[in-house]
Length: 233
Ligand SMILES: *Cc1c(COP(=O)(O)O)cnc(C)c1O
View 1 (cartoon, helix red, strand yellow):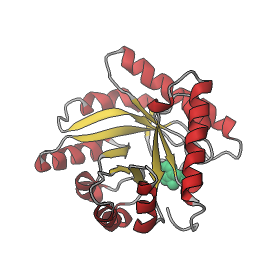
View 2 (cartoon, protein in one colour):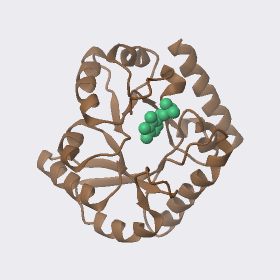
View 3 (cartoon, helix red, strand yellow):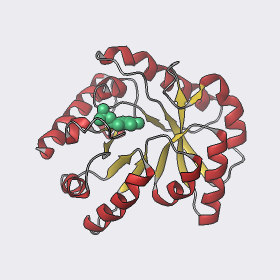
View 4 (cartoon, helix red, strand yellow):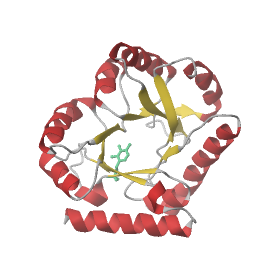
């Protein structure tokens, strides 16, 4: 079942990429494993997946150790995709290859300090808030210039691009303007000297639209592993 789901998603990513004149190789599938145990993760590894996303540090810690161990010699890449509390930032820097959810300068400053202590350059994405929803984290577009100026002095962080979570719509077409907007923000900053490659956008319900709009990382949980229990964030 996992095999069929993954194959189907890759096909849909390829078709969406081709519709937009992009190479399917430019899009990385990140399997979101919240609520999913190590056995399933290892099964996903056996089906070719290497990138996994978690939204909570506590749940991720044990899972990452267990899955890495069980996956044997395969090197798995772990992505933090959920909001990070400041008091968990040290643990996050130790655990994750890429942190998608950098949503405040304070958090970045802390992460930089812990990365320096660990002798690590931490790869990050900057989460941008493009909707007015109270419940969504991220840096509003108008605050980006100020944050970026400070960020450039943080030598142990390397920003590889941007991430966003649009509001949920039944009809994925309604998410398109958000995805397009994030791409435009990236492209405009790149014209001024930034070298952001990545756009982390698109989930089970809307990843094809996100790919058409330039996503380089889609974060897909339900479409791979099935519905999760409602309380798992
Ligand atoms: C849960 C989650 C996903 C995956 O959601 P699905 O709808 O299950 O694909 C992607 N991104 C973030 C930030 C999430 O919290």
